[in-house]
Length: 311
View 1 (cartoon, rainbow, N blue to C red):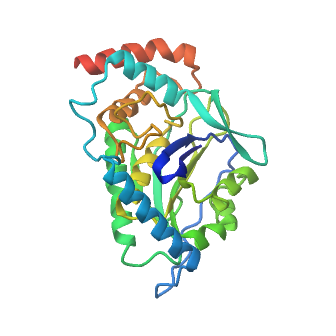
View 2 (cartoon, rainbow, N blue to C red; view 1 turned 90 degrees about the vertical axis):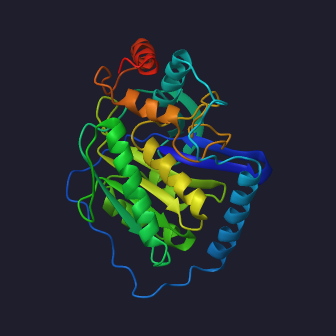
């Protein structure tokens, strides 16, 4: 499971969190989205206040030269050794663990995880998300999914029913009342995972949880929550971060640059190095369930090939 963002203070920047979940997921057809109201519903004073807060956050980050959208350049060089090291740290470690009731921060070594089946992605909006915002968000998700599919080779289609990757755009009041919906989308979801969504603190910008039946099994379900209160760039940044992490890059690393898998918020959108990380994750030389010790030498070889132009 992966989450974007604890923010202690605007001046302190944002820290990316990585979470993992191996809750058993019962098979079956997932339900389509609930019907939306014919007119926009008021989102409430708390959501309005969050909208102001996140707009100020985005303004501050951009003013400091953060949330870059250029993907990196001559000022952010990296070598194949750096790429391989970042891959192991981001793909083979988790930043959160579950004790069954809560999720707590603890960096732990993990196993390689990714999708071994086609992704059927749906975009679902809370009832208080303005109708004018929905087409842009749906298009941003669909466009980024095409990019992820190209990089990983995983077929990704957009659907309204029987999805296995759910992207939920929710305002505060929507999300807090979404526990029953989450249980319907992911049968067998743990209470710690439900609370990770419904009790999301203001400091946490967005979150994705990917589910499998064990370390040697590919992902079978994922749920991402994007806060509807975010201004356009922060919302798009969350879409990039959570959908990319939901492909299997679950951790972050302060050494990764240029990268969105870094808690310094220098980059807001997927970077050139991040594209390499995704291509590496889905290289057929890797297998789901591999340990860091087994994957590390393979990562070094693939990173060398990528940066030398051999692949």
